[in-house]
Length: 384
Image (tube, rainbow, N blue to C red; front, side):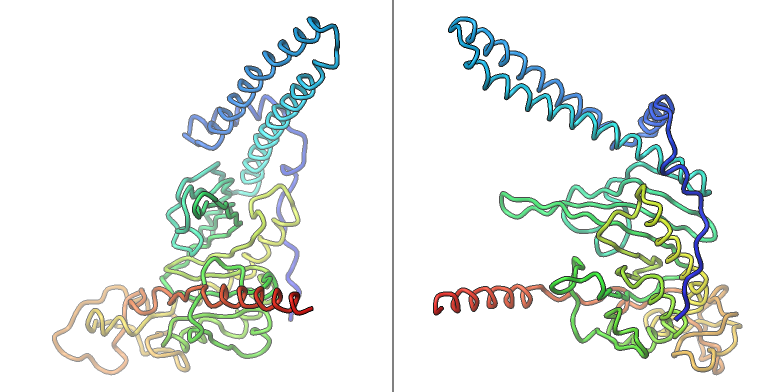
């Protein structure tokens, strides 16, 4: 296993001093672009401070007045204590707001310094990954985007799930990489970041698990659609498996449509230079191997759409059925009323219906196990 080479990038904007005037100008620019996150946070801080002033000042006045009338300062102490608490809350909200403004400004400068772009917030981002369609109040924040040699987005994401009167907000960091062609829905559940079971927000039918050669199974559990096992083996060649083990062993991975997603439970867009080095290293290690995935084709599309004629040569030796050589693109094809010669059938880029999404399985089995373990533990305690 090779050690990834150090990644070179300019991390100075993450920590160097900033001019408050530049921060204010940046916030105004974000507002002009319609970035609702900064505007909403400013409004919240103003409301909190206004409420503190409206509530705290009259209460202090009442306490002082009561103390003067009674001739005892002790009567006013509870009011004074409450006033101090409210002031502390208002001060905390104000400081957190300013830190958030500075953090967003630093990330914007970091993106510019490294040839990328920055967007403050996107509500309900239109991405096909498993985390992007759960709950409500979905939003991606602090988006840092690279555009060459292919589109890559680093961001933080959160959504809220309501259960009865309670609600829970789940937070993720993610990296989204645009691929050249749609691929089968494949998930790599990293074993190194799991606790009691998988930390993924979805579970998949066990008959979709595929064991790969070498040490890969020690680091990831791979799920692919039933019938796409040979295609997964074509995509995850030994050199690509080595890249994932070396660079992404702590990241959950999902391939869906023409996207590759890396998921983490910590912030991906952050002021921590070490995190950026880790993620840049992971993406850079995979980027050089993604071009060969562009040659994959799904021969099941021939059955769905009918045969097409292509001047491309036959499939590459050793590749699964429907995978042509590097020269095949599927472009410039047209339907024929007769069967073309052998080696002339080439489906266009795409994935047949059965390979577009993995089959989900409910978490009721895991919940049942947890309940049974809990009941058994209580029973043993009673017997003891």
